Amino acid sequence: MGQMRRVLLGLLAYGSVILPMQAQTDAPPQAGPFFLTLHFAGGTGLVALGGGYRVAHQRLEPEVLVGYLPRRLAGHRAAIITLKTSYIPFSPRLGHSRWEVSPVAVGGFINYTTGSQYFLTNNSAGRYRPGYYWWSAAVRMGAFAGPRLTHLGHLSGRYVPKQTLYAELGTNELYLVSALTNRSLKLKEILTLGGGVKGSW
Amino acid sequence: MLSIFRSHSLISYLSIAATAVGLSSCEMIEFSPNDHRSPDDKQALTDKHLTTLLANPLPAGDTLRFVYTGDSQRFYDDAEDLVKSVNQQKGVQFMLVAGDISDFGLAREMWWVDDQLRKLTISYLTVIGNHDQVGNGRKAYGEVFGALNYSFVYGDTKFIMTDTNGREYNFNGRIPDMPWVRQQLQDNTVRRHVIISHVPPQDEDFDPAVREAYVTALREDPRLVFEMNGHRHDFSIGQPFNDGVTYVNSYAFEKRQYLIVTMWGDKEFRLKKVPF
Image: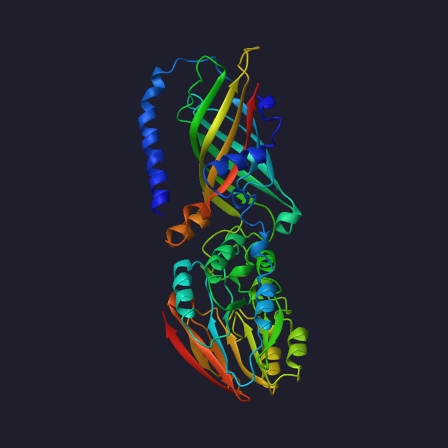
């Protein structure tokens, strides 16, 4: 798991270096705080729709997603409800263009999959003695990191339109536990890929 | 912005991005960890291994010998070492894993176990455990391995693999599937029967409403050599019902021991413990 440790340390170092630059950035025309998201994969369903509200000088994007998991993927049709926050430490503009590239945004999520086959807790399932299974089949937690490409539109009204395309490499806590307890499991085996678009007008 | 990506779907863009960093994107694009679908090379493993095994029938006069283990759940490092050890064994025809292949009932975990076990020079066969049924696990097991109840004949012996994880069905009175089990035990075209399942009948996770029927059916089978389980993570051998039927429990992978089972005659057998 040395590879994973290096990635995590790299991300931490990256965050601590660029944070002080925040105050020096010229305030560009601001996008509105509300945004909508169309998200694919990454453990949140085939496709998920949602939205959120930008905070902390638009560096944090907490959001709610409702994903759709069709029957052919998991036996029963299910919804996956995800609470998620992305942190965008740095999003420099490409010269004087209206494009911004953020090499890495990081974040975390927690989600809930509907359906009676996914017990919320060992005890709520009603068939196990306490401690039989230590995890929840319905709730997953995870973390992710990935690049973003953002386009800023022309000011029309109060806010600048802003669209972001992003990809995310992530994992969940059960995969992470598996990898941390087995040196033979490689980082890439526990990674999941997702991505989507966010927009505000 | 959309014009830039008009020629590519988002998924293909993501795939290209992932390929660029040297990752196989197909298996990484995950809609849910509970997705039971599996890539071609990790599908129907039971059928694939049976085809290989049965293509090489036991030559007349050779002794039937197999490796018996269970509960590989999240013991990937141990699985790696177990494979190295089993590959050193001579005259062993196949390996049986007595359930709990996965820990969380996720398809990826079953792939990870197979990543190790496919390095075996012999075929391996599994039976479903309770952990393999959590969430959508039952479907994942069905996709990656195959049937929850199946049997095969090798070396004049019928191996009957059955789902005894009654608690996962809320003790619905139908697990194990007794009509199926009885039908299998009635096969008198072979010399010996061996029945293998995950949860032993003396365990609290075995449906108490079916226990008597199961134990009775085994007692009344004149061809039965013994019954084999996993679940308890440690080796044991005994006759818990004092009815002449022997029950054998496997070591879990984490115990870093396995059994080599040798069978001959009508009901003769020998168990050898192998540490690794």
